[in-house]
Length: 148
Image 1 (cartoon, rainbow, N blue to C red):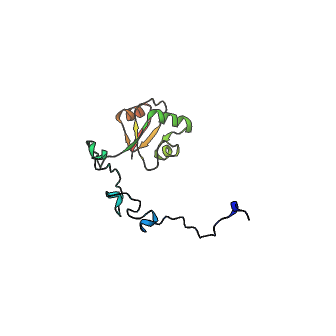
Image 2 (cartoon, helix red, strand yellow):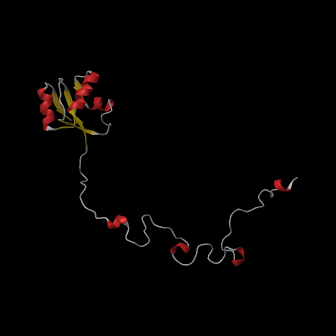
Image 3 (cartoon, rainbow, N blue to C red):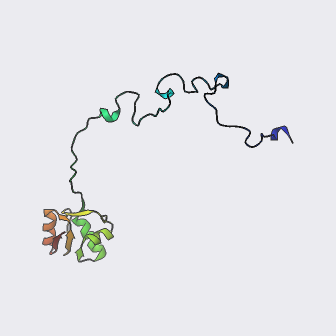
């Protein structure tokens, strides 16, 4: 046994600081909370976004605009993407299932075909919505437009 290897018995040393047990403990009186103010009181918790009484940023910034709760969101797919899909899969008909399988849209998405790009192949396209230019281009290439 050497002095540098001595250790106290297991459980005999308490690591938790006991607060509020009188002035003699060194942690009495204010119990390490300082003097006065909300932080010294029991039950205090700072609210999210609280800026010390200053008007919070969330309330200072002006609010404007309108979000329509009935808006229908479509996943836009252009004609050039459909042409690329037809070239890769050699499909004669493009429907929602084929678009979802090839990762152009999610299963829950509503799909709208837009007229950007050029369609060279004769393709029957089925989707939820079409722009006027897209349906003209599909029919001009000899295809058929079917709206769900």
